[in-house]
Image 1 (tube, rainbow, N blue to C red):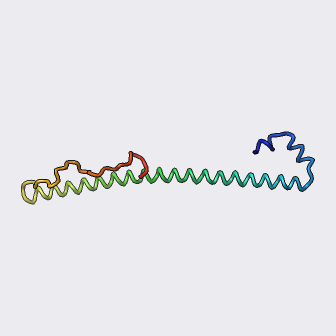
Image 2 (image 1 turned 30 degrees about the vertical axis):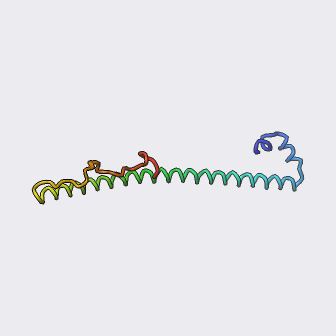
Image 3 (image 1 turned 90 degrees about the vertical axis):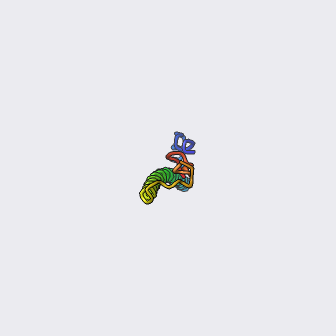
Length: 113
């Protein structure tokens, strides 16, 4: 679109020989083209912001998940310590599943939720 006008030497000669209405029309066309390019640049910026927000959210989710897992492990250790010292002997675990995290995070590391 741009090359069909501004890259052609004949276009410049044509503009120089045009009357005032044709030159105003060319100015309007150039203004419309500039607005269109600004709009495309705005849309590209919005897409970049969206991608950065998703990456940031994924990192925050991962960090939050790690902190919650650490707090849960600390709480489990406190409960185990309390049951051991209360009766002198450890109480049997009603849940034989040794996995402390039965519902692991299904998202890959660094991935968005």
